[in-house]
Image 1 (cartoon, helix red, strand yellow):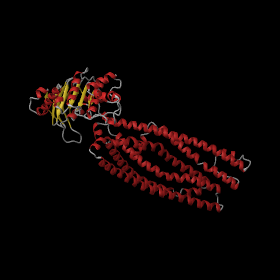
Image 2: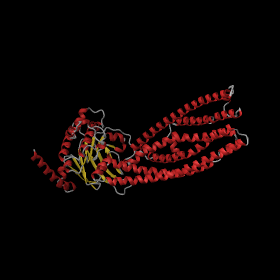
Image 3: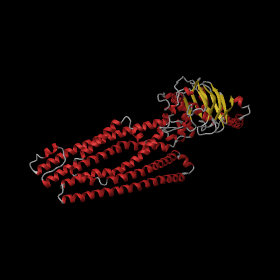
Image 4: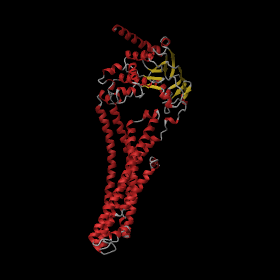
Length: 602
């Protein structure tokens, strides 16, 4: 089954594969004649004639020599020309294999990467980055390398044995059975080797993936590691995982060394037996000449060494089958777009939740229980609640990262289940609490959501996001390159760059998922004030724990235990017993004190 899947990966490139196999087999056919040139020369020097099984037109050319020296010169020139032709074919073979391998690798990488992009939120929430990187790189290289090199090598092996045996049989039917005497032993040991390495490679691949994950996590979280002086723990963790990987690989090498040692012994024994019997035949003047025995020994290499190389081929085959399983394990996961809408309506920003329930497939309890609310286009809505109350789940359902268990969500009167997912998400701008920035300039990170945006709009978005003054302090301003994941910026600066990036995109729906948490209260107020006065009015959803952020909203939704406990404005909710009033009494006093300090400072 895995072999069929492996072959399916070359769909669309079968022409190249068949061409490679044909060229490989033809090359081995032509090589089977090379020892016969040597046989012809030795026989001419020894007994003055030769029975070499060369093509008749060649023998006719050789016979035109008037002396032994001339004959040898003609044979030598013919052999040089013959080998030149063969090397030209080898060039074609290598070129075709390289072209096929790179085309296949590129197609597989594109296919797998595109499929990973289409997998659902739950998959990405639980996937290990290091494991995915390994599958997209080394596993794909293993598959393409096997199909481009090892599979043709199998046909090369079959052609080599077939043509080599035919040539030996033409020289002496007795010698062909002697030459093939050890082949069954090599075949049996190769099967044993395959069974061993198939299990070993599966464990090795899994262990290597875990090690890659440890490395990736450590590099991504290097600042956290240093902040807690946790370097030794991380080093010990990697050393432990590295040792597991090393031990598994050493186990494989032990099995491999036993196989190769035994294979070498079988090959040498085969040579010795053939040489001894051949010498006896020649000494006893039996039906074999010195030239013929030399040719047999040369042809014997066509039988023994390919059989010995079967072990390497089997080892790679085992690894490739494991890689194929890992690749198709991802490719066979259903895309989130298998469940998709078809409509692409105009989206202005009206949102309605109707009795929405949600729980994860592997969960027992609902995260949302009958959530209902209505947001008008252009409104600013704050969603507050304790940790775990379902605030972020609402945003994930709205963008269809998750699907409702029951109930429905409407966008401008159309159920989002009927709206094509890409169309829906293109009209939403989401700023996360921990935004991702690319290792590009500040300008590029802001403009990346709208490559055709004018510079003036980028500067205006930075001004609204209250990041403009910070950028002015950078040595290269907007041309300053931020580190990987934006590590050279503070948490608040990253959030404000991400806000500017969304504003540039000019979406009808903006979502701030606790994305003002890393900015101070004064900057928070500046951003909210600027958002209200910006030219295009978007429907804005703000998830926050700050009452000072929520109180300026047109509508406040209070979540408790997955249900909407209150909906209203700040003026109505602050005087109504409940969670909002409790938070206001705590945070409102702090805000009043803060505002007082600001006034005194002025």
